[in-house]
Length: 114
Image 1 (spheres, rainbow, N blue to C red):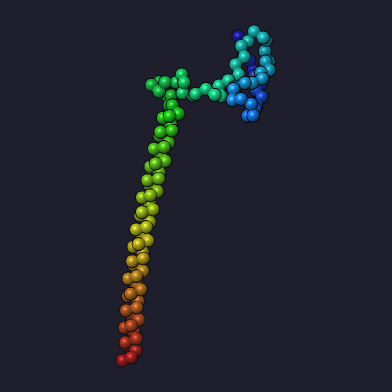
Image 2: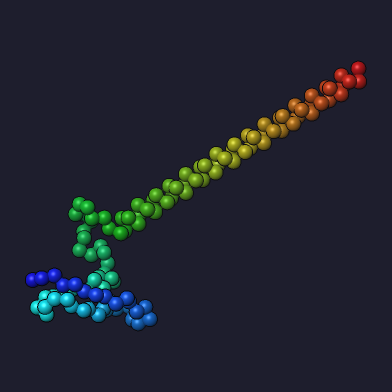
């Protein structure tokens, strides 16, 4: 059996969601034509059990990606908390410096009066 090349038309999204295609065969009529369009609506996990090595189901990928995103969110929340604490520390340091500056200004005024 030889190979068959199939030319597919773009899907018509206004029609029903059935997988159809118009195939123009480039070999003899004895060859079997397999349309790539016919696989569009199939579940990629069918026929690929998770127990086989190298096959990762879309549910597994979705779970792992969801876990990854949750950890990224948690990490970002921790970073936000750390930055808030840094801002609080900086604000406290600024208040201390302002009080120290005010104290020094009052001391200078006192020394100028003497």
